[in-house]
Length: 154
Image (cartoon, rainbow, N blue to C red; front, top):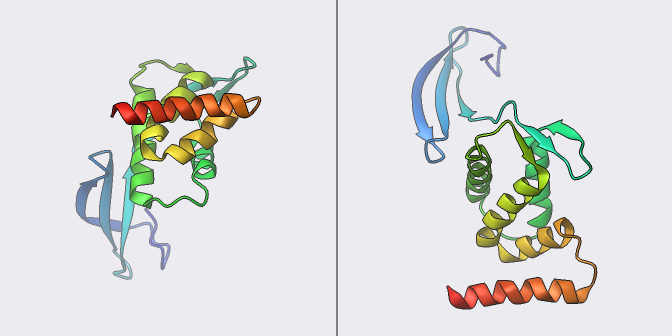
């Protein structure tokens, strides 16, 4: 890890702590040259996962695309960044539980919507309307009615 002040490659880990429910490590570091102290965050990353798109194309899993889609659905909604990061970790953990090197975009979409439904129902409806390609107001209303019915049961 390079020092952010002097770019020295020699840094020493002073302290390490688990964060994010044990799925990331926060490290305190100190530069051996200028003594500057800084923190780094080490997170789990999904590697070697191929996403099979609806049209049959295959592409590597890209966390940034997941984050962008979630942020778009949560636009102008109130949420804590810490809770958002937890949501991403939960989605990725569910994807990893599939224990396969290939997963369809539909499977990822369903996992995402399941988690998003309990995180923010408005964001869920926004995401579902695009993901499920709602054709008209009736389709939209059906999904809202399902959501309201589930909420009454809880």
